[in-house]
Amino acid sequence: MGLIIRILISAVAVIVASYIIPGVGVDGFGTALIVAIVLGLLNAFLKPILVFLTIPITIITLGLFYLVINVLMVYLTDYLVGGFHVSGFIAALLFSILVSVVTWLIDSIVS
View 1: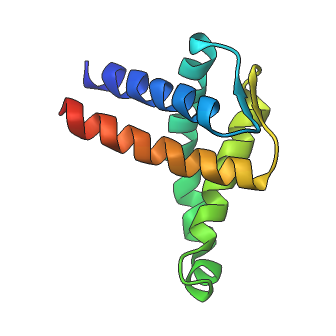
View 2: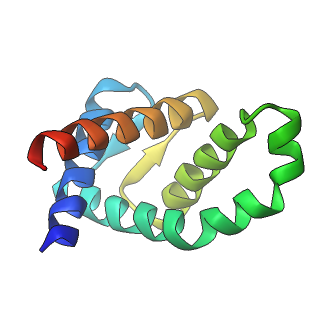
């Protein structure tokens, strides 16, 4: 039950971010659910591999490269999910930050 609630919270965060950030579009709540699931799967399986492989550059940039990895996850989600559009690096960066913050806020309120 907790997983379903977390996916719904992430979908709401995706919808909120698409309304706030210009350059990010989601066709509907169903698409937002798919985006939340795909982004969650990518963050669970692919992101740890990328973080491990980029440890040297992450250390050199004092952790700022971690933001680039987040943007890559958003771009990959954009590529995989039809009906989800991100136009530009800054939009993807703001989207990843806003989705993280909104998910954290809603999760802390619900828990």
